[in-house]
Image 1 (tube, one colour):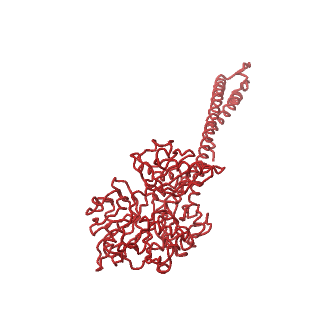
Image 2: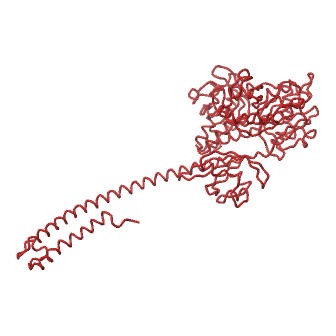
Image 3: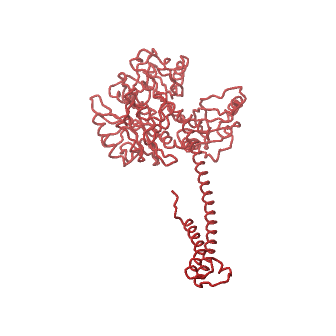
Length: 607
């Protein structure tokens, strides 16, 4: 409510009192004293007897009246000017607020589009548990629920979930938990973090990743000591073995690639002297003690460091390895690098910073070329592999700088034909490139064409992986021994072995998660053609592995339900006594990398 007795009202009241006082005081005084001069007549020069004291008072009041009248006029002018300034400040503040809100809603729409491309279930809810956003995948599972309580939509419950971590999240914590959904019996890994809105209010964003499919125990599998060591050494998953004192006693090539330490630098040393953080000592020793009691742990997440001290986020399965007498000889830790995913999760609030995180991922080469094959984008992975900085190559001809002379004409012709629609630029292929030192590196490229409204190619974005140092798998795979069963059951990749008849004789538990078939449905019943897109493709895999000693490419495997699973497939012949008696295949799910590629393209188009 506006104040009544402010300075302006007070002066106006005083001004009125002065007016009445100057006109009434002298007449009143003259009547009482018998004088005949009324009002202002004495002041104006009228003749007659006048009381001198009354006249002096009247003149003083009149003079004060004039002074306060002038002061009142100046005060009104000052107030008017201040009101104008206040109105201008209010309008400027409103304009800034509208601009901020416009930018916020623009970024919000961009992030909603990115969320809708994700296979994981994503939702945002307010402090009173009302859902503010659901992505497409979540709506497909639980239906539309924006504006409703999250516990009602997701769990059909009127009460807040007993395990809910909302209070911790709204205090600023990042919380990850696993929970089994009683309605659909699916198990989700739920990662939640706080989200600050423009008005200062807090919401929380949650990502639900389905981890239901466990790794199913496979048929009895083993090998000789040499087979185990070869398999352990060449697995594309970073693995190391440790003893009860946390000393490293086994270390494979993938671990060296992930952490930057070679075998000599790690064997016999404590993991806390190499990649594990000393702050995690108590937690790590707890799991080590439990492993040597016979327990296994899946889905652990750690913040490790590499040889240069850089942080690497890893997803870890750890379990005991037994000898033939049933004694635990060591603990095995199988680690997958999830650093790129962590970086993307941390930057979801801004599509621009999200793009920068993808660009800074050193595991993949990301390059963009315009219609003239000139370089528009050159990420850190390219810098690491080639030895060139982005400043050295931006705007230069890709073919002249990176393609060996023997292939320059061929690649330029293919690209020119693709621009004129006389040919199709391949989306996946292997190609050598030259580094700054002149060394050739073999890169497996995945291309995406960016076109204008007329369907013409304006640029090409290529994401590549360096496959130069992938060594061919060792030649011998022989009959199994029981002590390696736990190892192969727990590695987070598909392992399948076929015999001479072409039927599967080994099918590990991760294969069921990845492809949907149980070992009972597979063993001695189906062949590779049942999980490939065509029988022709399955034959080509075997032919290449037989001729070259290894098949190593990215392709689509077929899930039991018909879905296509992007995978990197490595197949090597199983040789006994110089005779091929079967084939061993390893497949890694690369769906996350493909999703990263899609997000990169979406963010690039929006920016």
